[in-house]
Length: 324
Image 1 (cartoon, one colour):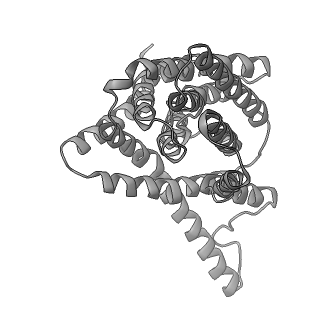
Image 2: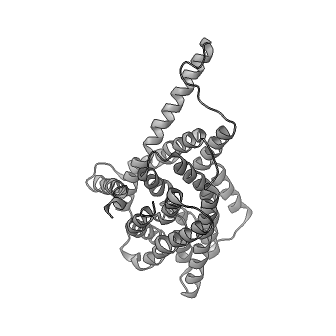
Image 3: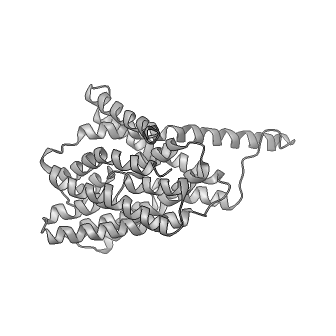
């Protein structure tokens, strides 16, 4: 039984370390935001690029994993929308709750959990990365739609902004670049493969670049979790716990359960099944707070959904890991 918690415990301890470091003034909010930018723009894209480019085989279980997760995410978002309408939730709160129920913290929580669960399982890690890319696009589309439906007008300007956001998303760009290298059959030459001095020099540069990206990618998981702990200190939640629990129930219970059912129906098994349910069990992403502010959603509620779901997700992630 305790084996289930072994890969989860380092995750929890890193988040707690982030909380304590922030609480005792080791770093401030500006530093945390800088750390977020580094992980978002450098470390995680480096990890995505290296893992996908070096993958021996792309495909297989990734596609039913993606289908199950995308379907479950869309269904849960629609159900949350219906619940909000039936409960006559205020416009400024409705879009925030729907977005909180669907937008998981894949990069800062789910991916580190998948990696730490079995760092040597490159096939499952690669499949997880392949699922993440399209899901980020889906999150942006559904998240904006949820917030716009409450009190914004969906016009060409807003659509253009969404398109630019997705076209410049570093995760999507890294996935595209990694897959392009993988499908092209590109491989970094080993030392001693070439006798020509120019080819040897080029090989040395390519190997050094690959190793540099690998080292950068290795920092992504711990830094992301430390930053998440710091973010939990910055957000105030007391006034919105009730509604936050509503979206958290959808995010950390309904979504992983539906993801598991669909993935099982579509033939996903073993570590891949565990990984996709981990994706479904991730807490609400910090990005939902930013988007809520941009589209006139209630940022206090958005912050509450992040903190409450992060706490509750520990149990959901433990259940997901037990599937391995």
